[in-house]
Amino acid sequence: MVQFRAGYPIIARMSEDQVTETAASSSKGRPAKNAAKPGFFARIAIFIRQVIGELKKVVAPTRKELINYTLVVLVFVTIMMVIVTLLDLAFGTAVSWVFGGSGPTDS
Image 1 (cartoon, one colour):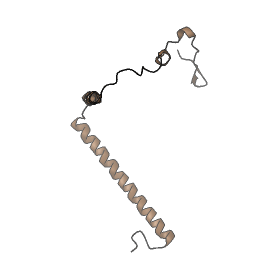
Image 2 (cartoon, helix red, strand yellow):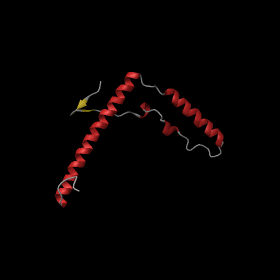
Image 3 (cartoon, one colour):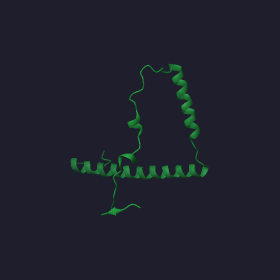
Image 4 (cartoon, helix red, strand yellow):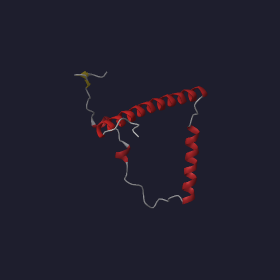
């Protein structure tokens, strides 16, 4: 059971025998430099195998999800277009007012 004091959990101290060895503390340092490094083409092959392995994990959206995502993006882009247009008109009008002119379409 977790105990709370002033809304915060009370954290109990652990004794040395309760602490397990972590990967960082069990590390013996850097790996040996004389370890065989794979060749150029072997590294390319490993990379391609890893890419294929990651692509197998990808789940394609269903038709319903794809339509939903598309609509969300279109609505978002439309809202952003309206916001940018209104800001452009407001700043254009403000600049014309400050520096003289009759409006944003002053010719």
